[in-house]
Image (cartoon, rainbow over all chains, first blue to last red; front, top):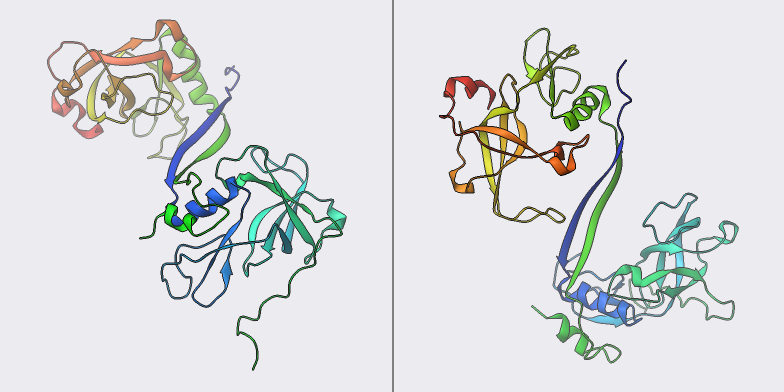
Amino acid sequence: MPPEVLSAPLVVEFPFTRSTGPVLGAFLTGLRERVVLGVRATDGRVLCPPAEYDPVTAEELTDLVVLGQLGTVTTWAWNDHPRPYQPLDTPFAWVLVRLDGADTALLHALDAPRHTLRSGMRVAIRWAEERSGAITDIACFVPAPTASPTAPPTPDPEGPSA
Amino acid sequence: MTSVAELLAGIPELAGVEPVTRVTLPARLEYTYSPGTAQTRFLTALPDKRLLAERCPQCTRVYVPPRGACPTCGIATSEQLELPHTGTVTTFCIVNIAAKGLDVEVPYCYAYVLIDGAHVGLHARIGGIPYAEVHIGQRVEAVWNEAKLGPSLASISHFRPTGEPDADPESYRRWM
């Protein structure tokens, strides 16, 4: 008779420390101070999260822009079974949020009932109580109060028409 | 290259605040590990200071820890046997960076010990001598961790030299 088969927890952890560089360092510093920064690319678009180098020309980017605290959901996916270390421990939506003033969207969590979700909905940042300079300084997004300003028009990447 | 402080200086809301320059982002995987029947037999024998192995019925190689199958022949290793606590260093490295949570002083030596009668090396720390004196062919014996005997390889604290002459290279050449 073979002995009962053993079983034990096994945790594999790599405690990576990364240097954040000037642009992401500024972005993370901003989050700690409740300010969200984007960076202006050479074609005039504002990228958030910011990129250190232009996605088209690869030029160094340094023109940081303070963004709004409200944004628009561009797309979402429902997460019915949150796992440990995810942003929320109750069912939530993974969302891409285009913050006011930005042209690209940021991945984060949205704490809202599933039936209220739609692309185009307005959301606001819920800041974490304790912030350290990490993406988790944004605890999650929540539906924007109904009296909030509506989304500004999406800028035309081709520039104003003549 | 522009520094983070220079970039922050241009933003009124953030001018002068302490800049973030580093983040610690642990990559963490949590498993429930089941070692299977063969390794379970091996592990449950360790508190009794016994090293159990298995032999392949076809190629006759002896595996420790046993995995229940021969990786060369692809068949079950049905024959069980017990090995002595002595072996030969077949390769080693000097570890200079302390792993998180490990209470061994660096530098230390980590080696493959070919247990007498086995055909694969067992990973183990070599202690009891200065790390610079560890060498291939050295004869070593297990030092059991009397305070922590349990179903884990931590039951073996380390291996130490036996003081015997080095092993004949022919005895381990094929199993390095």
